[in-house]
Image (cartoon, rainbow, N blue to C red; front, side, top):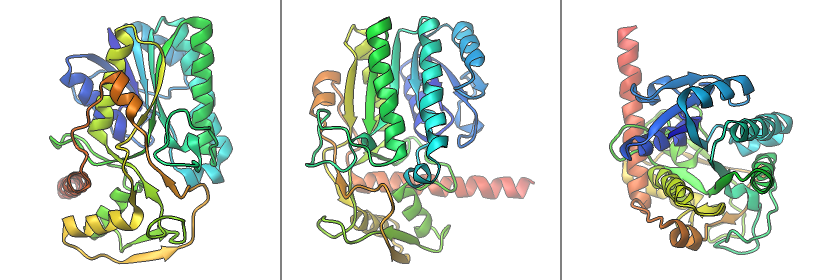
Length: 334
């Protein structure tokens, strides 16, 4: 039994690969390296460079490695970019996912774990938001992911595929053993940006809107540590293998922090008071969204280990310092 991890050279996918390896699983990674890194995939893991929308490549990979489960991470994920380029997001996140699902069914894949997003909820009426909340995405990114959820529901009914949809909230931090982290230089994740500002890799950072109906006017989000998120995927895989029905779960800690609060924690942990500029709101940003996580705890037995914002920020800071050493070493050897 082999698990195919699409996007396994990227941020979250690389942590899933580590989780699978730590559990003794057989893994193969497919990634086009548009935002991922070949070095992020352990040497012992078979690596296929290519696009998950390449149907022939998917068919060949499934057969060659005896794939019985897919963990699908490959996607475009930047909300403002999706507003500017909606058709690009619908092509990459939705149309190509349809091809992947079809080839998975034809190839006899039994279980499909899908990386969805809290963006499917849009601007929820109440928080914490449960999986039964009405789905009203406000960005093409959120809509592109919701369409895949619908496809999985319909494909499961027609073909017997069993799936787990995991709706992420804001992912942050790095592998506690220092093996992986958020490595994309121009990533838009708040904690990544703030840590880069603290280390002087950016001149400062922007806060987009301080007039939201939240406790300090900045957006409120639920931040989940990336290894805890990977563990949730592993729990989902075990659940499906154990005969569990298809399921949709939120992945978050049921606690929210505002943008300004996160920046304060980064300043405290780093010991650096970096410049912060207040700008206007961005299109597609809800005021507040916090995960209700009763279902994932009760049904999948998920128990997070790193629910501490100071710990998450410290992991991100250490990983950013590691990347700087890596760049410096590469430059000196050039």
